[in-house]
Length: 259
Image (cartoon, rainbow, N blue to C red; front, side, top):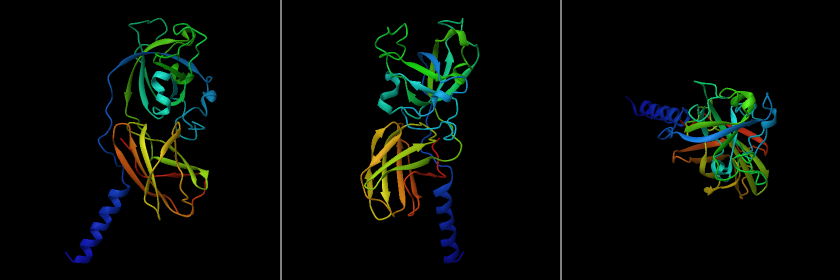
């Protein structure tokens, strides 16, 4: 084999390894825990749009109606945004309003605030230290009977299975990049994140709110790369996702995904 052919093969291998589905140590499901669940947002889940994670229109961002707002004990100040949970109605605690044999997997997209005016066991469902899911109504009705209103559940955190790659929406202004990261598979939630311009080194970002991460550099006119580490420690680098001509408000899709 000639030197030119060998070099060509190595280059093709590099390209393929850079863009195929890639993950590090896929996330494993947790054990089962007890919680409770209510529903909100209406039969079409229109009332669940937006939310404390910043995902905006859940239909267009791919989360749909299989979502939930988490109580304080689960939300962890936004660090749980994007995590996925498999939920079943706990028939051993109360079978009256359970749909037997059914489960639903949801993504955490919102925060259920506490209501300290009501007791924890009578209306203050999201008060600490309760573990509670306020689910989109269509998701809740997969496991619960409507007239029950609230049901006991068992849940486990599970890997998120997403179609396509991780997406980055770059908002902000000069000297302030606010990056929303969506459609994350695997562990689903971000532990840390860095950004690099084509003329700069890596800069550590900080969580601004929900799934929005910020940096304070002037990166206009540079292609942008991101390094994302999830809460299970798996990490991926997304090279030159945004081209040099990017503008604030644009969303860029990658070909890389966690599992």
